[in-house]
Image (cartoon, rainbow, N blue to C red; front, side, top):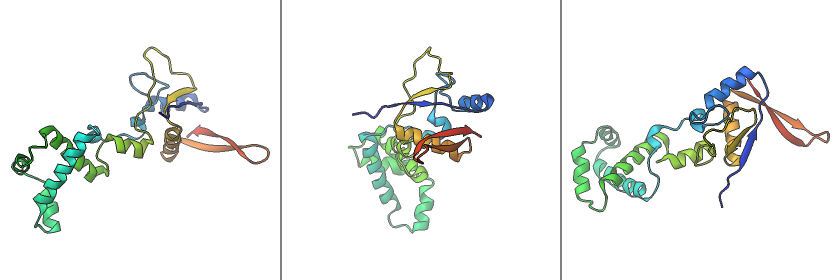
Length: 193
């Protein structure tokens, strides 16, 4: 069962500062009042590759190639040799692996480099790790005015919590907890800084 929820964000503060923040995080296709997580925590472009069996097959084959290509080399020489792998070496390996298509190979190679650079192979794991959801905010419709102060987001609750935490870390907002008379927490108020 999907975990789609609608979140309403109410903002109070200097209208110019609110407008500036909303401008910075808007989905360009739908305008002010929408949210694009990629504007808050940008995903590296190289991660935007297919996540699935073809990439997994290609990555497995590319790892086997790397192991073979660096076999017998010292750690230092192996690392140095990985900086500029000749295409002929890759093609020779692929000739021995008719079970791997060129598309799978290219996906696997990109995934391997993503793992080296970002610790994840594709968009899927990066989004889960950085946005706490696999999808960007969605559910917007063309022609709808989202410029009111209360904003609707169709994302999971944990995504909103993480996004708010990230906005706090970047210094865009400040959290002030509110309590009942008996001392129990009721809600938080957020201020633009």
